[in-house]
Image 1 (cartoon, helix red, strand yellow):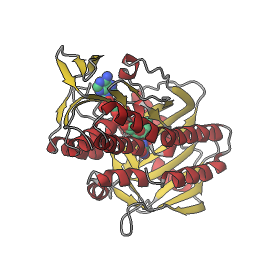
Image 2 (cartoon, protein in one colour):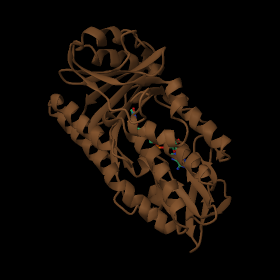
Image 3 (cartoon, helix red, strand yellow):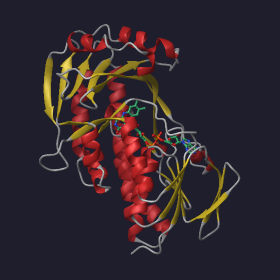
Amino acid sequence: MSADPSRVLVVGGGIGGLTAAIALRQGGHSVELVEIREDWAVTGWGLSLTGPALRALDTLGLADRLIDLGYGITTIANCDSDGNLIAEVELPGLLGPGRPAQAGIARSELTRVLRDSAASHGAVLRTALTVAQTVENGTSVTAVLSDGTTRDVDLVVVADGAGSKTRELLGIDVTPAYTGQMVWRAVVPRPAWADRLFTFFGPGDNAGLIPISAAYAYCFLTENLPTPDVLPDDELADRMRERLRPFGGRVAEVRESIRKPEDVVRRAVNTVLAELPWNAGRVVLVGDAAHTPSPQLVSGAALAVEDAVVLAEELARTPDVLEALDAFGRRRHDRAALVVEASRRVARLEQAGQQTEVPGLLGRTHGALAAAI
Ligand SMILES: Cc1cc2nc3c(=O)[nH]c(=O)nc-3n(C[C@H](O)[C@H](O)[C@H](O)COP(=O)(O)OP(=O)(O)OC[C@H]3O[C@@H](n4cnc5c(N)ncnc54)[C@H](O)[C@@H]3O)c2cc1C
């Protein structure tokens, strides 16, 4: 049985922070969220919500809305570089009959829905603000914010992403590890045949296409590169088309629609896995700040939403916040480690030219993630 509702400060307004705000408000806690950016603009195009992500979003009452806004997916088509089908895999549905196993969605749509939901549940959302310091007081924690104001709260939830600075403030020592890969994403008009998730195994790089709405899909490409670099923004579309040149068939068709540099993002892939404890006193890590898998597992958002749900459940179970945080970390660590470690193995296989082993590893990992959280 939980005690009186707690006062919670959430740091970071991404998927993890916003879903934590929703879950904690639904649990009756008061929530203020601070986001360091000046506005809510999102970078990146599309995102796949896997079965576990949809299942966790369903407990927040949001899955159907997001599926409607996105594009429901039930099948993965694994193809060679010319688009010839190697194997088709039916994805296990975790939401029950009549609902898709996964959904592709534009990131901007996803975060807009999460933000609206958090605000309509009564969370206070503030931008251009971060936490500068936290001081434990025994029965509460004082957070000093970047505008000089302070908050005396029962819990601080740190959801400031893979490059978390707040994690450093807590003395939780994790250095993001570069996997030796860069990922590319480009939003493209959805071809009529793109009614499922396509992956294309190229001679060096892997590519794929994921529908995110009736009108759009995103094309992804994984590039092996020992040392990460940064390309000029205005060259991104040309460079991505160039890297997709070894592919034929369907990729060649999609490639030609990548024309505007602003439709393309390219990122170095870093992974993070913080060892337990994930909390320092009443300050706890969630989402990418605690565990960042590489995008090939398409599960970072799923883990972040699950964290939010589990944190609210553990706070509902006991009036002792520290006990709840300990239970939260123990319930989440091994599942997050499974994903992060599998994603590191995928990166190694791809770099060793053993791409054909990747679908099996992905299938086994997604199978394990179907287990209840
Ligand atoms: C290219 C790419 C593709 C991906 N594709 C998928 C996919 O298809 N499916 C999937 O499940 N996952 C995917 N992921 C992973 C997914 O995006 C992340 O796991 C997820 O966004 C984590 O959410 P988060 O809220 O923990 O962190 P973030 O999304 O990084 O959000 C952190 C937020 O905190 C803010 N912030 C940062 N520092 C501070 C501070 N000091 N104070 C206050 N606010 C701060 C940031 O501005 C941001 O809004 C992908 C990742 C990448 C890089």
